[in-house]
Length: 177
Image (cartoon, rainbow, N blue to C red):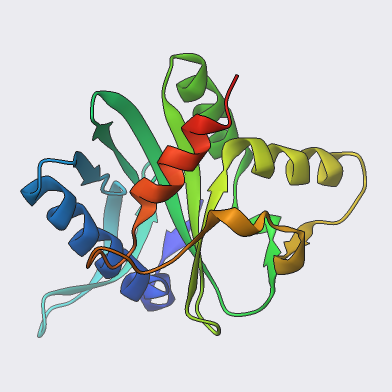
């Protein structure tokens, strides 16, 4: 059974940036996106500070965020990477299955990748991920490198948004059949 401890706080900076961006989008009436809490059951607590020090996950989580952008259902997961190589082990098959089913229902599913060492955000379409995923399943690389990514999906800081992923959604939608 999976457990959580303090190292689970990795990516909390990225999460805070995305949460603040979601607030900006909501305030401007552009999108309504919510963070999906991961259900955990506490096992051990620090009684002095009332902090959970050990817990287990009650179920597999699917995505970090879900909501709507201008009437379009959207779900995504945010991942942080500190090198130019992103291990596909950071993505789970049940997440991919959920996202594929989500898109079959007319939604948009994607990953926000933050290359922290370069301070770069990347909008990874589900289509692009599936390409890397299939390569892995066929015995190929279990990761992808930054230079393999489609250049137009890097997110620039524009319009005062910390993580302007709506730009990625717009490009993603324009490349669909």
